[in-house]
Length: 243
Image: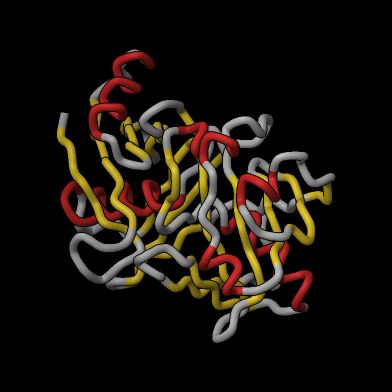
């Protein structure tokens, strides 16, 4: 197969969030793809198979297959449009989360992702102790969205990953608060999937955007993920709303 590593959500090499991209002729076994992702040891490795007018796309962490990944989708589109077919302006992916598309306008790549609106839920018993900060509210989608007091609380928390692993029925933990110089900040942890902290996470924003859009009554938001990369997302919600 052809294999690429793409640093997504950044303008510099060795920044952003690296994704593996594997171009296949036909699907390998699930076990083999999982072993490849484990050996790559990146947050996600994407596997693609070309079909008639679109690509099948699957994503694997070092430990599990997942249903949605932003940076590996962006990385896959970048590879296809720069190394497979340089005339391509749009690519469609069939995935576990439905049909996803990426459009290219010169050097700008735009992802069309689903909306995962979170629903209020009870605070898990171990959560505050595992995060070491006061939890104001929790909401559930694929991940557990955790609202804390302010940006400093998000930036300074040091999770106990062994304790977080004891909290079941959630893929990852999105820690968020209103930002100082942006609309909101976040961090993302998924220790049960072999990802202690993900530096820049597209899929978490499918939950963060509808949450903060409603709370702030805004249709265009500036977000910052407080990893060491501190990448910024400019996310615009179209008038028709997110899918």
